[in-house]
Image 1 (spheres, rainbow, N blue to C red):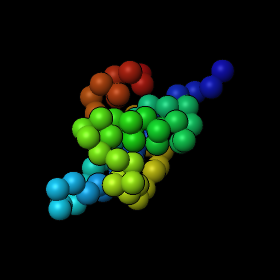
Image 2 (cartoon, helix red, strand yellow):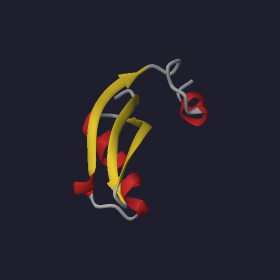
Image 3 (tube, rainbow, N blue to C red):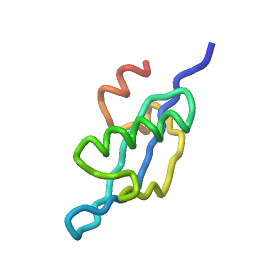
Image 4 (tube, rainbow, N blue to C red):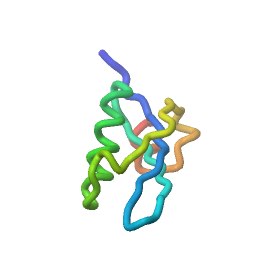
Amino acid sequence: MSEIKIFRITGTYYKKFKNYLFRKEIRALKEEDAIEKALSQITSIGLYRRQIKIEDVREITAEECEDYLIKELSK
């Protein structure tokens, strides 16, 4: 059985002539699944995928996680 990992995805998006920085922590089995989930969450605010630039995707431990809900689910 596969183990669920925590990924931290950082990047920027462009909206209304400004660049915004984002950081998402996602639980997923694979890196591709985590990227897809983060993109779907960000595009729900009215952005296109071409406006989003992902700069870093890395796997983190539950202790490094800053999201309380994800940290509790990983115990």
